[in-house]
Image (tube, rainbow, N blue to C red; front, side, top):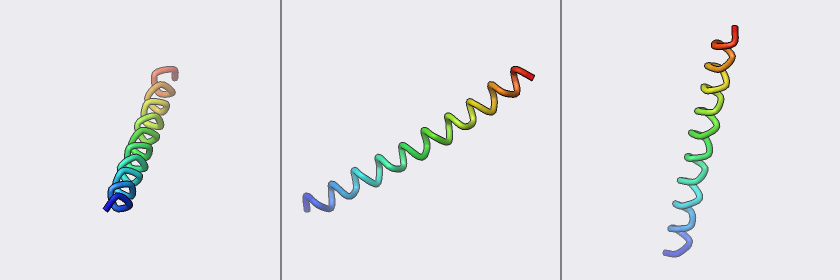
Length: 36
């Protein structure tokens, strides 16, 4: 039971990290467009 919950938390954390890096990439692209 505890292991299953830890696995869920780890999966959620990875999803959040992926979402965060995607957002940062979008922000970087947007900033580049503004500079041009």
